Each structure stands twice: as C-alpha cells, then as structure tokens.
Length: 291
Image (cartoon, rainbow, N blue to C red; front, side, top):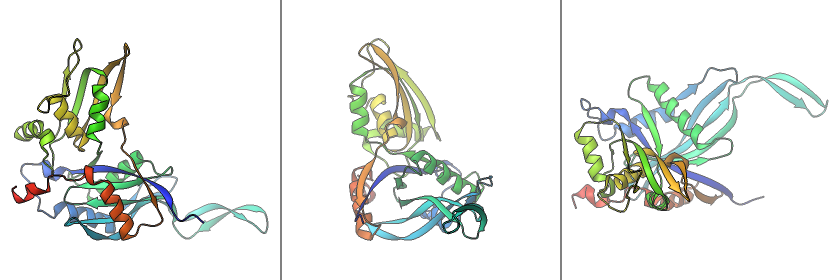
C-alpha cells in the first residue's frame, strides 16, 4: 500500500461584491462569517437528471503566521435513488434503490479569510474550472442576494513577466479589479486609479504594434497590470509576435500548480501546503502595523 499520494494544488483569490460597494461597510469578520456559514450549512442541488448535489465538509481551523485559516472538503455527490448494480453471486446487472448519497468527486481546500486566498486540490475527477464554477454557484445559490463571490486564480508574476518579455507584445487587454484586502507596491499605482474611480472592474487595452510594449518599468501600466492580474485581481489577453508569427496568449491559461506528496491532511501536512504557497500569500505583513 502506498504511504503517500501526489496531490496538485492551485491558489485563487475570492472576491465578494459587498466589499466593492461604496454604500456598504462590511465588518472585519464579514468575509469569514459568510463563508463559514455556507460551508457548514450549504448544499447546492443542481436539480438535474443525474441527481448531482454539491456539498461541503467543514474540518476545522488552525493558526498560521498569526492568521486563522479554515479547511475542509468540497465536492459532488449523487443523490440516493435507483442505481445500476452488479450481483457477484448471480453474475447479473441489477437495478435497485440505493439509500445513501454516493460521493463522486471531492477535493480538499484551505481558506485564509484575512488575505481571501483559497488553496485547493485539483483531481482528474474535479478540474479547477469546475471547482471554481461550482464553489461560486454554491455560495451565490446559498445566499440568493446580489452579494456574490468570484474566484480568480493567483499566478506567479515573475513567470508571467518573463513569458511576455520573451515576445514582442503588440496588444494587451486587461480585465482588472481593485485589490481587496491586499495592497502591494507592484501594482499600487494602477490599483489606486481603480479605487479613486470607484470601479468594481475595468477593461483596459493598450498597444504598440510597431515597437511592442515595455514591461521593464515598475511604474509602467503594462507591468502593473500584469502584477495586479497575477495577484488574483483580474486577467489579461495579449497579442504577441514571436519568430515572425502572431498568436494570442492568456493569463488564465498559465495555471500555477504546486505538487505535494501527502498521506493524509494532518496539521503538519496542511502547514506544509501553506508554507509552499507563502510567496503567493500576503507579503507586506508589516504594513498592518503601519511600518
């Protein structure tokens, strides 16, 4: 029997619309309270012929670097009902009523309420796009209000920039959101413009089809836009030229994965996951103390 299994984890930023509404001032625990209530009580019934239901299992919380994180499982079960079974003694396929809900696919997740970062496992049976889509739907269906969530994947900004700098970027289109709760120097100029405009989101296009765009200036819009996207506050699509050929590249296609060999999700294993993703976590902790 194998002692450990390979697990792939991704990281994302959870956006909640109440934080971007000027007339609302959510409490400091608003995000955590809303998520925990949904995870402890929420069930999303798709009401389809496959009898699929999306459910949570809350496992607990722990302290990491003076921040409380909570964790659990999210996945799909098949509602009890008529199922095709097989009788080994009779060597027959039978159709009979199964009383219990059958687990079909579920994965482990960790949420840091302070940074609004979610780390989650990806499996062949539950890919990241479906995980994100159904996690969002579960929350939005549970509350049934305009206060909804959206999850954007966090990328490695360095790798994004390296990829763009190797090519002649003719045009880039950003879909950006103002940061919340983080505030990093790498994207602060563009971020402040969005916040001063009271923007919930912004679509910005820049181009230079003759010389190509520059990404080496830290205060340049192109570089700051990539940094904001990489931090989980948007995405971009770029038209590039390489070896005389043009193609489109998208930040959403560059999924950042971290691999782990894990036996079970003990406290030490969870700490190992958090530490590996440290560089994609809130870096400027001193800012909270006004330093």
